[in-house]
Length: 212
Image 1: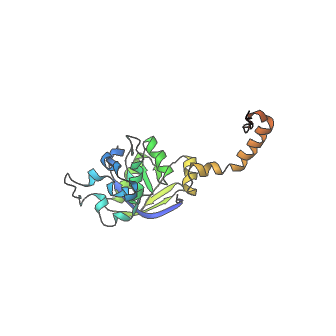
Image 2: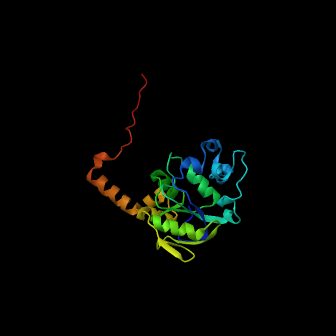
Image 3: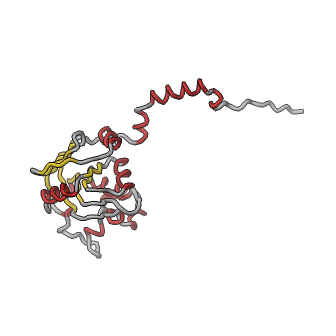
């Protein structure tokens, strides 16, 4: 995964609470292979009418929105079913960070595992950020090392699990995290095997079958 340290990019405001995973990617699109790009399905039913015609007033259809890498929304973002495809849709569209007062637990975990930063801010700070962004893409600065983000004159802090922060700063997945302890694991294995040799797997003894 691509590490995240600083993001100086465009942000968009999605001023809605309880944006669930079925809104992020409607279930009917999940039969499609990811290779075609799930970004085209992001928030599909919200940003299109019943005939599939794009709503020109929706934030993702505004000029330069396709270059935005940060989305700011309200509480309980990513609630609902545990579909990882909701994260795929955001990542494939180009987002690298979502800012909200709270996230669905499974969504947040899936986000980190796919290199998407779920930045948790206070509700009052969310409203300040939404107001600063307005109804068009605007410049936003995200600093994961310092855990602060800024839009115009509005600067707020955000929280994230220390383990998740480490993974995102380094672009690590769970296997990469485990590899950081390779020496400790090797030392423990050697000591344990020496103390309890009977626990080590032994190759089966070969048996000769005589033919009479």
